[in-house]
Image (cartoon, rainbow, N blue to C red; front, side, top):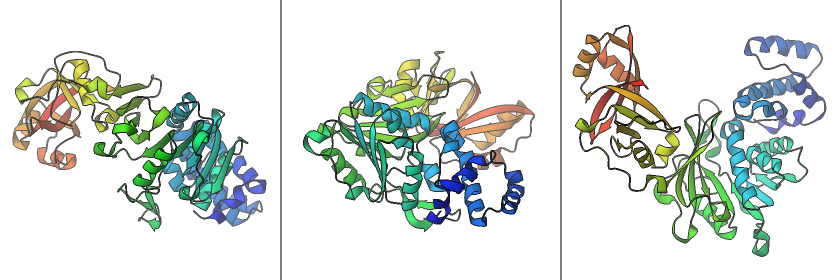
Length: 411
């Protein structure tokens, strides 16, 4: 997306046109396009408005009703922090008595909007000119929020006494500018040295300004979590079971030092799991004979944070194998950040034996879950060749280092 496709919508006739459009409907887009052109609107303006209408329809999942008053870029929308998570970010700064947040790499302004919504001053910057224009439009309701086009590295940081009530928020770019994949989206980068600002630069920012937070990939490696005197918190966050980010927090923004998981679900209170919750957990199972009557699956944020031991503690069981996130127990416990299944059958993975067991019971409609094993669910489905009418859920995983299958039902 270039500046020419956004600039006409920033105020005036273009903004009025965009706001007048009905909710996006792909089936009527062509007819609407024709009608708008016949009404005298320039083709370029119609195209720009309809592009934003499509993006707003997608954005409702993240921003709800706020999407109707925002502008977007495709990459910016995909990478933007969803509203509920941004509110959590902002609350950390507010609790730390921060009054001004420098948002370095603000994207379309999702986090900046949350900061401004809590009456924090915002100085936002983004290296992409189009994105900075979009962010400025999205922050137009907050006079204390300013957006500039530029590099995070060129921002003059607060120092000395000025850092007492000032904080930094960084969302390093994890895509390569100017390089697109076959879908037209910019290509992802995965190395901490390739994000911009790089991980080393992010840590230097945190050394300069104590109240610093950074939004990073959920794949952030545990061994890179700043320890020692840095005393940072690495917080893996999930929404509705999907891990969205690993946010690193320093100084007064830290809730609990070390690795933590924040589990968020619509309609439920958020739950935080910490290393202390997982400390001294029972060891993983030593053999398949110890599999209990119930199987618990930890939320993915808990698994990513390496805190499945907290689930083993809670249900009085043991993880099937290190890192798989499945805990076996004979105990029946409700855990808001885990799914519970009743174990119907348990056996070592062997396609022929599993197929025979399923056929004998008329089980053919399979839901296949897998974690911790190099098995492809669709290939497994083909290998099993079952056609029964009854449903079954198979969990393919490791038990004591060996591939194993459990037949389970939601408890």
